[in-house]
Amino acid sequence: MICVYISTLMIVRFISASPSVTPPLLCTDSHHALVTSNSWMRASRLRLNPTKTQVIWLGSGQLMRQVNICDVPVLSTQIKPVESARDLGVIIDSQWSLSAHVAALCRSCYYQLRQLRPEIRSLTSDAAKTLVQAFITCRLDYCTSLLFAVSNYLMQNVQSVQNAAARLITGTRRCEHISPVLQMLHWLPVRQTVEFKLACLVHQSLAEQTP
Image (cartoon, rainbow, N blue to C red; front, side, top):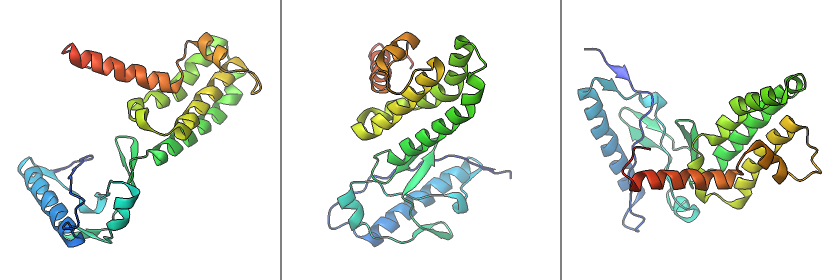
């Protein structure tokens, strides 16, 4: 029998925050969910790798302080819950604030901008725009809809990346206003981009069209 290790599997369990839900009960419930999932995967010739499995508790800060669990049984191993986990390129933190994801996104984009700066000077405006779109805009657009409910502080951090990319293409100085530059490049600000994408998804769903 040939088994294939599955690369990405997310198991979501909604657990009540009532006082009757104790840490041992949380561990038992989580272990039961993993055993059930593992049985289904074995029947489908897939295999769950406990050494690469991550467990994360999601909830408010007050709720997270009540969950004091050091180890969670996953098949034959014990796994410590993590503060953040990556799933399909998105970093999910325990409070679902996406602060870790935004920090990693900005760090990656600024690194790419620093690498592109020497090359941009020798390119035409159209070629520079294409290059920045390939390395920066695609990163900003990936799973942008998840940023709809983030704080203004995090949204401003992402907007700063777009502003830096626009200044790199056009040679605009930091003291100059960025809105006319974004309009010239036909770039929507990040928040408007998020709202536009969500509006398109809602419209397609209401029209019974596949997004």
